[in-house]
Image (cartoon, rainbow, N blue to C red; front, side):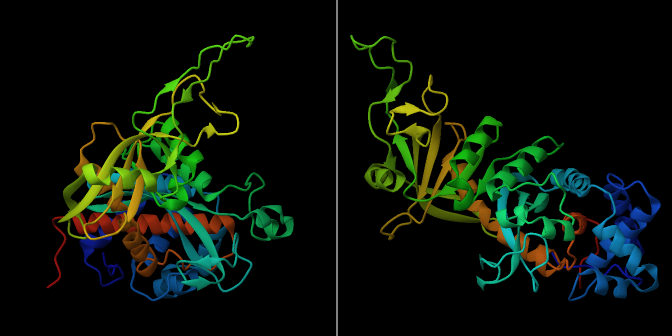
Amino acid sequence: MAVMAVDAGAPVAVKERLEAFAGEVLAAAMNRPVQLVNGGLYLRGLLEEGARKSLEPIVERLGGDAQYQSMQQFLADSPWDPALVVRAVAERVAPEIDVEAWVLDDTGFPKDGKDSPGVKRPYSGTLGKTGNCQIGVSVHAVGGRGTVPLGWALYLPEDWCADQQRRRKTKIPEEVAFKTKPELGVELVERAAGWNLPKAPVLGDHAYGENTWLRDRLDRAGCESVLSVGPTTKVFAQGTVFAVPAKKKQAHRPHTQRHPDREAEPIGELIGRLRSDNVQTVTFRDGPDGEAVTSQFIFARVHAAHGWRQDQRKWREAAQVPPREEWLIAEWPDGKDEPTDYWISNLPADTEPERLARLARMRWKMELDYKQLKGELGLDHYEGRSWLGWYHHTALVSAAHGFLTLERLNPFRPRPA
């Protein structure tokens, strides 16, 4: 998906479609004429060719159409809700891309200084080293015909939450408190679940899949999921019986909690025992062009084990009922000594192996999405130090991304020679 020239030399039809799209998605959040004008200009600036998509070079490329001070105020301080823009874009684009999954992930936003909200100096996968960066959590709808962001959240470390001076300088609202990345991610999923969008299973890497609170909350919210986990994650094997023990003679009250008839075990050990009789060769669509991929998988029905307290032999929650049944998925390619990946899923028991395998492997599309959002649309180019400005920028980048997706799907768009 390449950035399109939408300057004075762009085809009239493209400019008209961009103006119509901007009017549609920006009007959801902006009710002042100056906001709509600046929003449309910023969107155009993101779509125009240029190495940097931060405010100063955008204004320079826009020439006399944009005023720097007005655009800066619009981006950093203007009281329009960025979530409404993201929602309008998502509801416009998602029905067009054949949504198959929602992907929960996070990415780094490199920073030169230390004053941008939430900036820390951890190891960054984006940088490939330790360096100053912000962390943004996001949810994206992924489909056979494209992707669309469903929400953004800026992770604010605990030391930032407690530093009132830095909070004031970066205009972090008083109600913003520390939340983990999984907590931010679940909130984004739950918010998007209330929109007019095609619902789909939530995918996530180890950082999210191994968070048992997140898996529980998604399940309670009625969200299907296929989440990556490691081999040490424990489950109860299929066939485990959960029964209430008989009352002992000296006991004053009968037992009410169900007890399993065996211990939970790491999924790596369980899969090792199941391999000889349960390996399936599965062919499914994967890859950038949807080509067929064949690999070997093991699918097993198991019970969640993370609510069990070994010391007291009882469930922390829902003690009256056995734990939920889930899918354990392991990819174990031929010739490998051990599985390459594991997943836990709450999809129905009658889900086809091909769908389980495809969903498990689909999360890679997020890396392509981040690459496009950053490399072509300047997702990580925002240079301001305003909390609200970061959200405004990511929302407008989402709008630019949505417009390009619709243009790519437009059958009347002229093809390059």
